[in-house]
Length: 260
Ligand code: PGA
Image 1 (cartoon, rainbow, N blue to C red):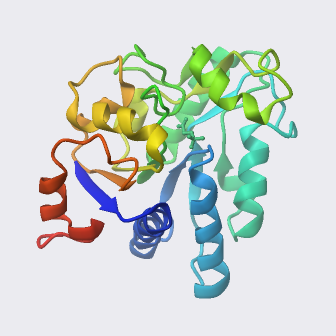
Image 2 (image 1 turned 90 degrees about the vertical axis):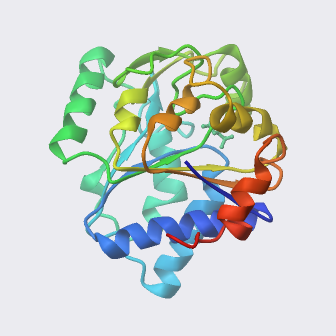
Image 3 (image 1 turned 180 degrees about the horizontal axis):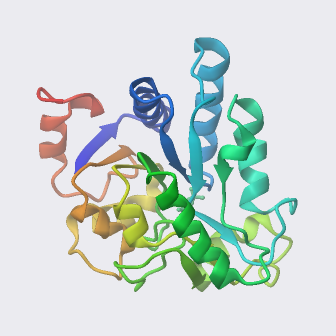
């Protein structure tokens, strides 16, 4: 794992944007795995700004989002379809027909999950998977105890995830109970992973992910198995790590190492 610790959230977001821009510069038709959540909003803003001001182009990219709530139509204001259009896609030059999210409103969510997993494989797999982390250590909606061998499927959300996401809905009762999420094994199949975490609320989960045992109780710890996983943190999200001196020796201020 590459652990990059940046001085603050703004610097962490800029570093994550650099990694995405470099991936697209090397492979303009990259397949991107995208994520939602509050952490990603400033990242999508920076990427859209680089599109406007620096010509960063997504025209040839394909994207697959990690997850979608079951029961919400793409037009529902709290759906991830809506989030992605509003926060990112409408600000860049991506071809909407090449942006994919699980179909949360499918009549048969099981079949829709299998079809989504197959579509990722048909696209040649994911080049760069962007990830956030839940306070409970989830990646995508792979909640604690999710199988580390899981593929795209239906997951029941934990109460803590529903409480964290309640702010986007009218009430806790209206916050969805189920989602379609790509699996931990789907995520591990990506050629590279990039996890961005900012803020002190993530410090505990980040420490378990990087320095805890590999365990389904913290699905993000599965990234310990990935040969090319980069974790971008601000100081607050890094606060509970024990080996900070080492990470800062390898990547001073979160910048490239001597051998990158
Ligand atoms: P957040 O969500 O960015 O809104 O904290 C991250 C996640 O749950 O993966």
